[in-house]
Image 1 (cartoon, rainbow, N blue to C red):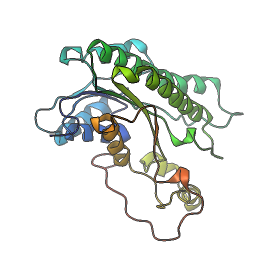
Image 2 (tube, rainbow, N blue to C red; image 1 turned 180 degrees about the vertical axis):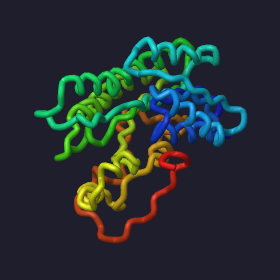
Image 3 (cartoon, rainbow, N blue to C red; image 1 turned 45 degrees about the horizontal axis):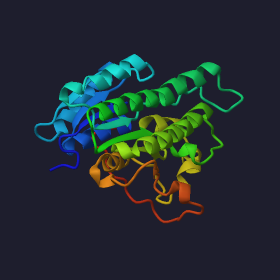
Length: 276
């Protein structure tokens, strides 16, 4: 029996990265997974991949959604009412726009776009998930909101709107967690470190750029999407019953590091689908 057996779950930003790997892990653990993304074609491919790995009898569906549009999020969550409502909501969709820079250079429209998706999107997902959980009298429900370690530590290579948005996610999550703890709804933030994604590797096109970042990791490497996904499975499961309102940092020790070892870097785990 999987740790999420029979739970109705929603994952936003599910077409790639952490969202895709988490969808696979949820499906392996017996959850019914409603995957959503603004990119409909990528989402369709992702749903096919997840179905290949799902436990027997689980329901895997895809439904495009722009999380910055409240009505679309409301409709997304409502689509699970016929199955008894949502048990787990993973508000993972987010952007880091290429024009997001320092405080002097980031345009107003990038601030607005970033907050519309990264903050309002999380707020809408939380709002309608909580509404469903309360109406269906869920007592072992969970919401996980993707924040970031950039809201905990500073960077001399800023993406200021993204950083501020993730700080807002952490504050929003804490407030909701305390308000609804006695209602049987656990709410936590996931705070990933930079991950080994094709987008990041394309940006880090010199050894100097890579070293400026990997030097802060005790293991000497970036994280992998599957490592975040495994953490989300734990937070979504009943095993995390006393974890409430936490900024759950999954960063390979980066935020606790000062001087790192010169020993060789150990191998990273392999993602099931992302990056392949």
